[in-house]
Image (cartoon, rainbow, N blue to C red):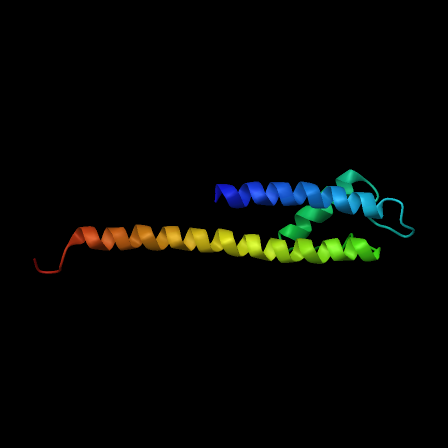
Length: 102
């Protein structure tokens, strides 16, 4: 879980920087400040995607596709780790009870 959290933070920061660099001078861009790019990155990585901001350049859209794929992968890792933790915990409780009627 720690590695997934650190990966998310690193990916989010680098994605925000990349999108800001590409989009800030583009005509008709909705991502003009670093704060806008951080907001866009957070909504993209969390798979919410409000639609209030979107990249308009080709490179910005390529970065967006990568961010979406990584967001889904990180969400899967976190969900899988949490479910594995729950399964181990509940399986450990069942083993400690012993056989029924014994």
